[in-house]
Amino acid sequence: MSFSPLPKTFTDICLHPDFIFPRILELGCGDGRFRSILAERDIPSWGLDRFGPEVGTVADVVGDALSPPVAQGSLDFLLAANLLRHLVPADPALGFLVVWLELLKTGGSLFIFEDEPGDVPAGVARYGDLQDVLFRLMPQSRGPLLPVADFKARVSKLGTAVDWEFGLVRNRQTIDAEAVLDLLRQPGEPTGQVGRLMRGIERDGLDPGYYWWARACGVSEGARI
Ligand SMILES: C[S@@+](CC[C@H](N)C(=O)[O-])C[C@H]1O[C@@H](n2cnc3c(N)ncnc32)[C@H](O)[C@@H]1O
Image (cartoon, rainbow, N blue to C red; front, side, top):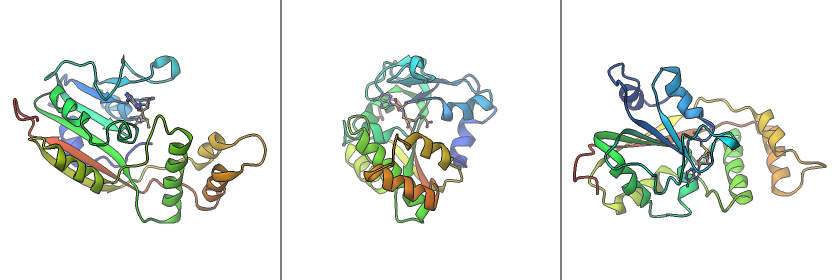
């Protein structure tokens, strides 16, 4: 899933024509949907994922986003889109954020993008159900969505000496409900939770709802932790 429109704060910084040869890393880059936004503007980036290109990712580095094999103070820009839901079960206190901030150069930015679960129309609720089913099918590799209020509460306990900026955006990205149904389709009549989800998607469609973003700004030498 992707995010559209992107926050102006994000585009102002990383799509600015003066942002020449930046060192941008996307953690959990997957198949590169988010990196393609940068590539469309000829902005070079590199990606890290726990899986390599042999399973369809665009990872330049195979590694764990909880402890990326990257030199401290080396990055202008660090991105994590649709990734927190995978990391929170292993580190509910979000200690990995401290590790990530250490990777940034002075003045660098960390951006996080996540879907916002909530009290929403039917098509959006089905999107939330889809995330729940994915979580139940793969509990070892992903957790439920993290609402921005929970994220803020956890960040405030971390005590990082950086400022955080937050935003909530109505996601205009479209989702191909038919393609999702094809992925969920199993031989025979679908039953149980997957069957209910499929019938719900057929009835209500899929709508990504809102997404939240967070930016750690004001990163300076010695002020990261
Ligand atoms: C939902 S996909 C998001 C892909 C991409 N960021 C996007 O927005 O299109 C999550 C990706 O994070 C990767 N991932 C999950 N846990 C990870 C970890 N601990 N370290 C590195 N990558 C991880 C998964 O392999 C997957 O490719």
